[in-house]
Amino acid sequence: MSSNNSTAQVFEDFQINVKLKISALWVAVMFCYVYGDYIEIYVPGVLAEAMLVKSTTETQLEFFAVALLMVIPSVMIFFTLVLKPIINRLLNIILPMFYIILLVAVNLGGGWVFYLFLTAIEIFISVAIAWYAWNWPTIENNNETSLSHTF
Image (cartoon, rainbow, N blue to C red; front, side, top):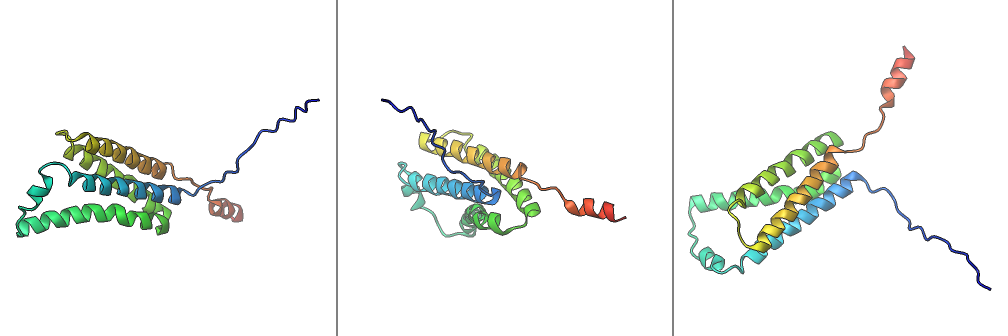
């Protein structure tokens, strides 16, 4: 007496808004940036070299440039959620492309395997951000249709 009541289990799923997807990708890429920089301090000589840094205008400008580079992805986590789709889409296409170019330029000379691995992941995530922004869902504009029927 075997009962052959096989019911396929279907898992619940729902559509995730593109803003949430892109914002989550910015979070992921920021973690990679932070972990890469954190792990890098353990590379032999890096900490010793950091101790030799002098407080000059040039050094302050370099630190400011690095801060600016890191602040942009940080604020994009929030801006992606609140900006209107047109500007949001544009920023989420342009900025990741800029970071991809920067990552490739900075890492052309090679380096430690962990850093190259994180760079590859950061590029992959940046491509995903731009891809989701490029393929931003659209809706049919009913205003044009209703105006054409009015006249």
